[in-house]
Image (cartoon, rainbow, N blue to C red):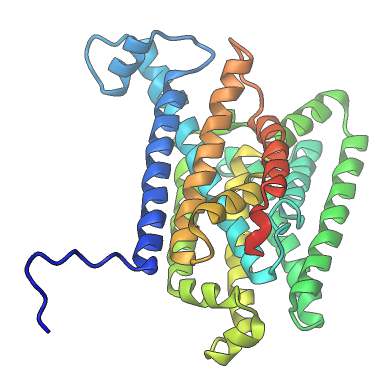
Length: 352
């Protein structure tokens, strides 16, 4: 029997509705992120007029030279660094939670950030500087220490089969090791050096500049490009090792490859801005609540969420203390705990 031309349209399938909801969530996230970026550029300890700031941002002649310098040489690098670091830590958190099957896994909780802090603290204590590009000394030390901690976790895990349980235990042991080494360095430091170490450990976007922003951004882009071919494998891994292996995935090789990428993402993120906590832990859970476990949507949503958290924290760090800037690591920690409590109470762990 033929259908008449006036027949009612076929209702969209549940899969189509799911895809529409995920795309909508990504779109709303992008809009919120853009708003946070704009507000972050407009705010700062200099308390510049909004009109003058907008004129400087768009390069209009009526903007004063001082405002132009503040907007382009200070505020814009800080905002872009917040966006880059937030995205990198959030993506690293998603990958770690996926390959380890643990909702508490993140670069911060498994010792990578603590190792970066130790590397920076050692350089500040000893006063060592690179003979070339001295401004890269502390970031290079933080980057190297992060890779050392990743190598330690990898070595311990490989000795026992690279299972998620062993990797988590190795990560926790590494966390306590480098936290203890941090405490020892702080104990040996003079009051002036101790102040510098503590400030670095707080995490601050004030270190962002057009010199170091391209380094962090390049690491992020390279790591994301390396992750993209494995998105379907990561999604399959969420169903369990046995099912992933059943569809032809080498689970151990995938874990090792993703673990190296996470180490690079974390090292690049914290090398210039210091220790930033909770972003890599909370952002993946928030993103997962909106788009689910499909890595094609989860990774970009987590990157957007991480950017929103970091730029939003940057705004708060400047609003809370007018005329000054509170280290952003303090703000992310203060915001991260209520977010985590809220996720627990609202049952967002249902995906696990």
